[in-house]
Amino acid sequence: MARPSNPGRRWNRVYVCSCFGITEQQVKKHAEDGACTPRQVASACKAGTDCGSCVRRIQALLRRGEHPRRELAEQGKPILTVLDEAA
Image (cartoon, rainbow, N blue to C red; front, side):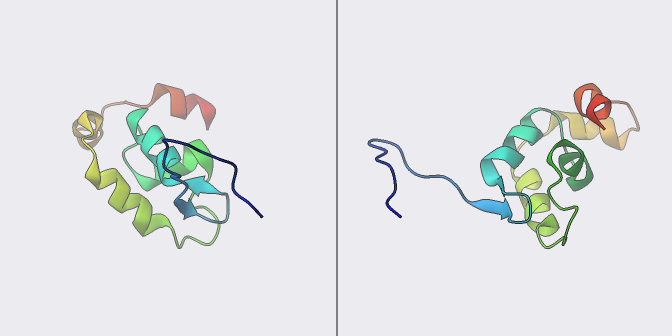
């Protein structure tokens, strides 16, 4: 199967969760939207809820970025109105 041409752009489809086809970019997007734990990512896209082999990778991705909302979570304050409504 031939790849479609993609001039000037790099292919970035590194799959984190093969069970549900979730990529690194999708996990990073959920983190930008406020998810700061694997459970919150799972609420948003189901990653990590089937075989569980991707949970450590999700944890690693979440630790790489800055998550100002993590402080609020550690203090027990509500931080995820969008994801909480989806659950």
